[in-house]
Length: 299
Image 1: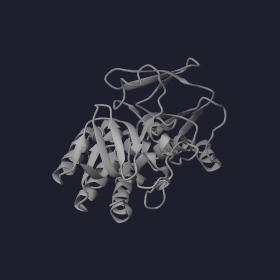
Image 2 (image 1 turned 90 degrees about the horizontal axis):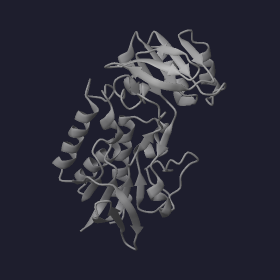
Image 3 (image 1 turned 60 degrees about the vertical axis):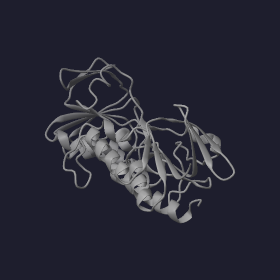
């Protein structure tokens, strides 16, 4: 069987694309673990229609929605992609091979981690990689942000409107962010900047309680937002000649098409939506890609 569309990645972008593709009567298959990074989120409270839902529950609902319309889901990783004359051949890590007329890349990104003690243990228990997603839960509390780029300073500014106190920890003495964000954090009385410092260890009981810095300082905090960037999962696709930006994200046009014919990309891995890495933007890009594939894809 040759599928009309193979979707590599089962996060919000991939699952949304599958729902739309199925409703467009395109035979499609999704490769990956349903939910993607969203499945690891402790609580989602900013997706319309769900006042509060865990990432795991969100992933389950997404999978059920995809299956309702008859699409297949293969719990595997794509290992190799071969660009044949009239179709693509996708080799999976479980030994299976899938043939498809068109491909949507929706593999997302991986959070860049600190790699310190307590980071994994307190994920969802005080440690977060998304202030936009989880900041709301720290109203009136003390939090810390680690990073020195636009996302870190933007997160600190956002959190200062919610929390009582924000520590901004940066390993250098100068920020890499735009001047606007630099002025915003420096002029905010609720934000305390700690420069030339790294987090050494994250500690607590049932939840995060304190951070030990490499200068010997101990910070009491209810939450830590790690904003040091993302690692795009693009290695598999480089051999296809897909164009990426300087950060490694896949360049797409307004219809989510990549530089290679019959290949689209959506979600966090792509350059659209102003790199606003949210479930709602990923889902929207997946829908746009499916509509474009229906219209312009290989028949």
